[in-house]
Length: 325
Image (cartoon, rainbow, N blue to C red; front, side):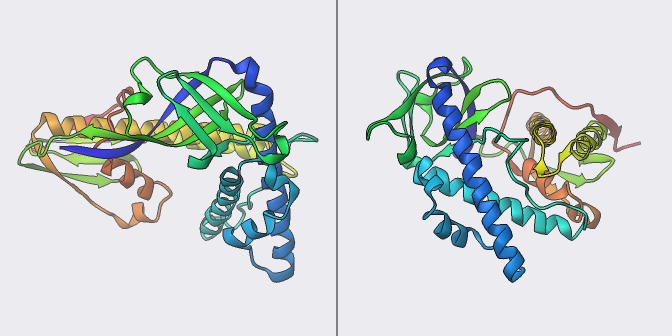
């Protein structure tokens, strides 16, 4: 049986020297739109004691000159990211009243390079020649047909001509250069049933997951995840800027998110591999109260549920315990 999943593939830009200035302009414009919208939200907040929602901010920003620096869908995505950041802050305030609202994208007198997202109307993909055409906003065009043509290369085992469709393309500054991320719909073959066995999964803190297979318990410790969270969170707080997160603070935040994603994907891959090898067709995931209220429980349950994802990553250490002893 085939199921359709969403995957993101990274590609290096082969003609980086030719397009980097144009991508720099787009990334700078994304930060400018964010900052103007953030300033607007701050003014409304002071007057009404409420943060405007995404629709209100979009309606206001469409009249601002910087909105036309990007393709309309790309500008809208910036506002959606800002609204999501505010919502995340609201949710966090219930647990940490010292948490800071989303800041400005500014470091000293310069703006960092924001990720720019191109939806269906903003790119044209040529999978046969490994090229993608990215739209500029009206303000950044020298003429009506002006655009950025990026030549890219993905991993040898990735062929974007074989995916069902490319949903969005993101231009991402990785700290050294620009790269492209392709968000794609992909069909993945799955077994109708791995077997008749049943295994239970307990989610925890000390042990991220405890899986009770028919013949033994398998424990997955979370020590490395907690160490990463402690180190990078401290780095983020130590480098917080006066006008919002500094570049070093944003780097620490991105690095922690990437390492957590890597860990969760690895955990998912390992559990599913064990399930198939042991003939287990059903996984029952518990929902303990202390995990539900933690920062980790929801994300981790979502990862465990992604049975179609099989990334090639290193396997985390496990502790095995015979259930018969």
